[in-house]
Image (cartoon, rainbow, N blue to C red):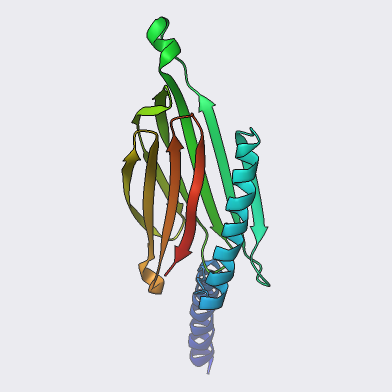
Length: 201
């Protein structure tokens, strides 16, 4: 009888830590809920509003912005930030003529099945209403995602260059992926605008 009781107690002692470990693992396991087509449409509508508001502020001379919008009836939000800064120039006549600026646009998504960010930036130089050169730099971040991008510049005419960036976020463990698009227009006047920002799957 005593031997049976001892074996039973040892069995219970083995089960309790195992169950606790299993519960702990479950508590720490993140969940990714794929958004519906309606939620994605609402998100892009919110983005469109932010783009209009941001470009109005840029036209008014503001160069450092952060805007955020709730998405429909969900708990999610989308944010849009911009910066446009003069960069240091070398001394001399050429420095006065060719003017460099640094641009950066960031879109962040949170709370609708995903939390990730797409950032597009670089520098451009302009002179006499024409763009003389531009660079591009992209940063994609997402805790549970693998990220990749395709980024290029369209040279529409000497005074308008368009920087296009397409991001891909994959959460292979959950079988979901999202595609983002961020498009920035650079102008020979030294200005820039956000032309497009959206997400899809």
